[in-house]
Length: 414
Image (cartoon, rainbow, N blue to C red; front, side, top):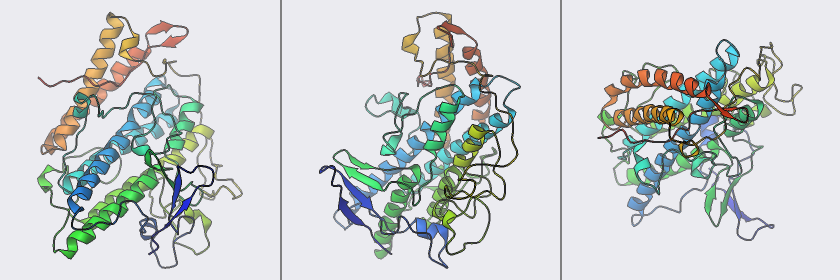
């Protein structure tokens, strides 16, 4: 398979473009979409016996970053969801809720993947290390140097927030900018590009291990969360024992988020079908990218719609309309922090919300570190989170704004 090439950017001597040879090509006939997607694009330096252990630790760090990346989208999505007033925007509520559930599932699957290679997921507890936080300080760029130009904040439901969400989930494909390398390290144009590099590293390290009759998948399976422990919706939950399992996990994550290299609709690959540059033929439901576009435009995708921007529908939904009331929203002050609020009843409610959210993260952390059965206890915390957030959003704080959740970690450990 092609390994890619480095080209110097003429406009900036400090920046280089990391361009896989096949970055703008659809799958070859007979090749699966994911096989094309997971072609060998450069990510790490060549791996030898002398640096194998170092590269394996780098892989674990990359997986921890993936965990933080998946989590970083949840507070913004929840703020938009909680800010919608009860009884309104019913379809938007269902769409955003479905995305949140899938993002939480993605967190657990990434934790399983990290456990499978002998790592230990750190969820929430990294807040105790001031230099290495798990919850980003919103507004923020995405973890892992994914599209550093995109700023994500805690905001109420609006056209602006929904447009930001679809930018978060923007597909990797022929119309994306290539991966870039600059003086600050590698940056990725999309979440899909980040996972593409992760897949490359997994394959490369496992190939080196296999040559020695070994494997990188040496973690204890009992530390992973299995389907028997997770009863929520949001898709399939995979445990990981080998490279094939690992690729299936990432395929599920990328497919649900932005689609894979195929079509948004279920259809066989056809040579020349340009939709396959972006979306996956095996995605059972629309990817997050499309669902947010449906909310933004207030209508569903029709089965005749194309995902391609040059199609008759320009990649936009043209199906049945549904009601979206952008005014039926609590006007939460964006990116509110506890330090912005004087000590008193409101401050206490913000602390209470953050303690509940921190307890939820601690619950997931315990579940993903050898106590998977405890995950069910987090369901009640999720219900509490909603009611405490809405309670905050009903408190006026001046200038036409309402209070809201700040998603700051408060240790719940004794």
